[in-house]
Image (tube, rainbow, N blue to C red; front, side, top):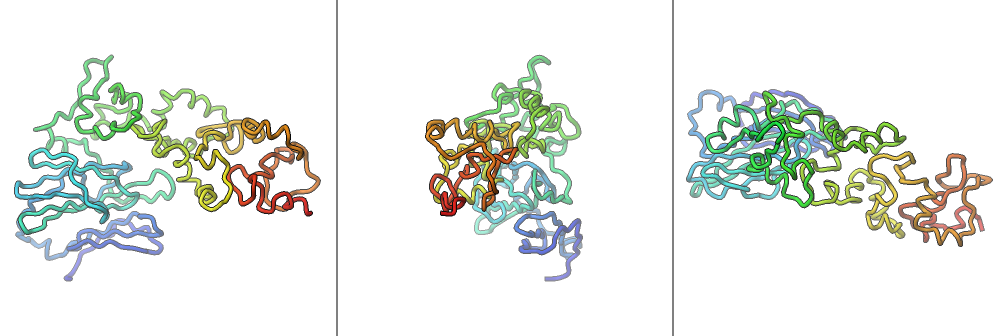
Length: 394
């Protein structure tokens, strides 16, 4: 294999489970604990560095830049190919091949969703019977959870370097009609149509005011957000801003100033611009509840229908577990008739604690949820599996 010169930028690795070694020693990426961790090993054969007269490739990736990082979920991949290159496809991390979204003469545009951690993008084409390929590595930073720090510089597309290549064909500098008319949608959407292609489009974009959030003249990287995304959200979502000052409990992502963990900032196929349908997106983080959904025999109807927001406020509340009302008030809002016929005492302090983990009121009194699991159970009526005998030893 010859000799290699290797420079390790950074290594966050306790136990490597998998490594990806690309041909010719060009890219080495390591994975640990099932999560991509920030590793950069530049391996280049010394022979290849010593004045090789290799002919230039008929295929070139213009963007993004290899060994950079981004927090974006999707990235545009721009490829230049000679006339003789046919059947261009892109593969991400050895996944399925995808075709270009658009081709303009010899320039081809792909859009791919990145996985969190290291990503290897490989563009493949053919010239006659010969396969040609180019590849690059880009690291996607996680918004929450394990904050592995990538040892790569941030990637930005709208810089002088990239726009200089595009300006011969594309208008890259949107101009507003006047200071009172910040509409730039028609220019931005020449390239960014995928951002607004879903059913529910974020209000500012729907009316073309991209410049409400994006600074059209930021330097050296243009079109950056005017403020941190959370601060931008609160400029318009004033009800949420006020409630955050007074509410006792705040949903984790909102408390961490990460609105875009749940919401798409541009467009979404889901109501409220959620990244997944309401209820399903809750299970992304609430894995214990997802396990109940999969394993328990009896499911509470709202839980079964993934209607979490029927009982819980997704943003803030003065009640534990972000409930919209107190525990028993929530139950009575649907089960009032059943409660009128109910003979078991509620709201009293039991003489002794129950023989299983249970919830009580602030004063230690019995609640509906003391006996009934509000989500799922192995017992009928959402009682413990043993039913009443779980407490009343009959």
